[in-house]
Amino acid sequence: MLTVKNLSLFYDDLRAFHDINLVVQKGQWVTIIGANGAGKTSLVHTIAGIHRPTTGQVFLNGLEISNKESHQICRLRLGHIPEGRQIFPSLTIKDNLEMGGFAVGFGRKKIKDKLEEVYNQFPRLKERQKQLAGSLSGGEQQMLTIGRCLMAEPEIILCDEPSLGLSPLRVSELFQLLQKLHKQGITLLLVEQNVEASLRHADYAYVLEQGEIVLEGKASDLLGNNAVKAAYLGG
Image 1 (tube, rainbow, N blue to C red):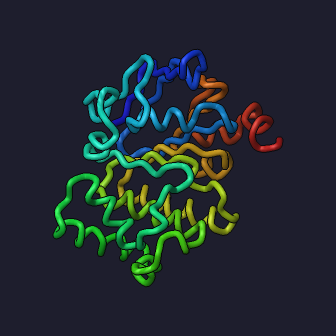
Image 2: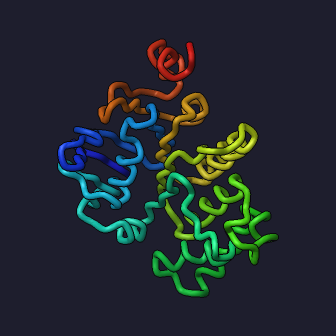
């Protein structure tokens, strides 16, 4: 479904990541783990079309997307849940959700139908739909960000550090939600510093260090890998 070939990104002389190769099959949950500054977010931004790669290619369902703008990629049903949530705090919850549908060119009837689907998924958002998004808690804002992404009917979602800044309880709820979306047929590419939770839920994993993939394999195997334990799990 998603194929990354020999992808590199440089900011002038600074290397963000180099020669990345990865594959996400339809229906898979793939995670990329690594320390802060490893290049994870830059990689997600490049796949999503926010950055243009220095070299290499990205393919979605066989179509090259590395030469497309982010809004064009979004319309190809690749969703993006950004780090830091990036909601519109001065708009209502309902307005924020509708932005997700308008961004991919849906008409008002379609957006109305998608709103009901999202509200069924997140009853709390429906209860507070007229409330300003900036007044929500961190966990509720993350819920809103996911809901906004779902408004565009994504087949695959890039999740960039979705647990950042959340309490342990909210992190647990977040992974339960991602698991639910995965079971509904959505393909996930998750970038996370919460290594243990990521590996426990994913099918396959890549380890990114200093901009390069240094290890890959079944997530369950990496969870038991001594090098991964020593570097990321305190063991």
